[in-house]
Amino acid sequence: MQKSIDLTKKIKEKAFEEGFDLVGIAKVPGSSRIKLRTASLERWLEAGHQAKMEWMKSPRRKNIENMLKGVQSVLAVGLNYYIETDKTPKDLSIARYGWGEDYHKIIEKKLKKVAKFLEKERPNSKWKICVDTSAFLDKAWAEEAGIGWIGKNSNIINPKIGSWIFLGHLLSTEVLEADEPSKPICGECEKCIEACPTKAIEEPFIINSNKCLAYHTLENRDKELPKNIINKMGNWIAGCDICQEVCPWNQKKIPNTSEPDLQPAEWILNITKKSALSWNDSKWKETLDKSALKRIKPWMWRRNINSISNNT
Figure (tube, rainbow, N blue to C red):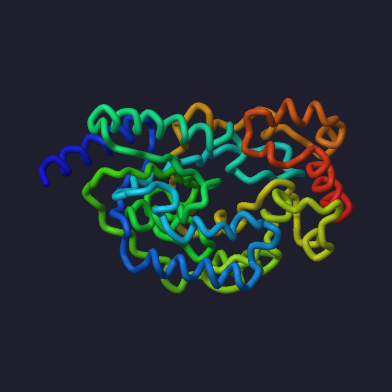
């Protein structure tokens, strides 16, 4: 028992040392809530709310053992990506998650250092790093590990830094001491539901991707966006932060991220419709090379910008 407590303390300290803002641990198989979240995913898929994101159907999500055989513990980490800055001009809006460099690589690099530290402490242990591209219930396990609860807009919310959080997980075959799971405290608040321009949050915790601006600007590969989406886009050309911007937990004074690679790129803060439409494919690819936004193909950027231009 004492060895487990000591190792848990060391692992957490190492995670904080690497710059993570939130650190928590869950034991596998977790509480009954993991089963409830898994069942909820099944209902979400059966309703077709994943739109054309077929990868969400991966059966591997149903059992954490599919990610790492013999997994005993999950280290959940959160990285604050909030930056308080005034973006000018304001004729284009890009979700904050894409302002800096690709968060997947940042989190993987940090978690790998934690994993290597674990290897030194326990040479026979096995581990696996998961980010949001993994077939893994990342938000459910973050909640289980106590770093935040799942809000009605489906984002993880932490009482100190709101929902501007990138998640990462380190699965381990070592037995670690678990933290208390987070308790949802959104209460009766439905500001996120009310603010969504397309009513994509059909009910608390249920996001219909077919209606979501973020889905259509980031994932939709059709040559033209649906008219009902275009009519509600406003200036959003890459993702959408509306449901987070109105959340009361994001209205308090949130510290700016101290992560150098998450500082906003100069082009993000200065891009205009006119300049963006003048970029050729090479310019787009070069600009987005280190960004999580590189999943948006150059023709999609132009489609999105033309969509909001035609809507004004």
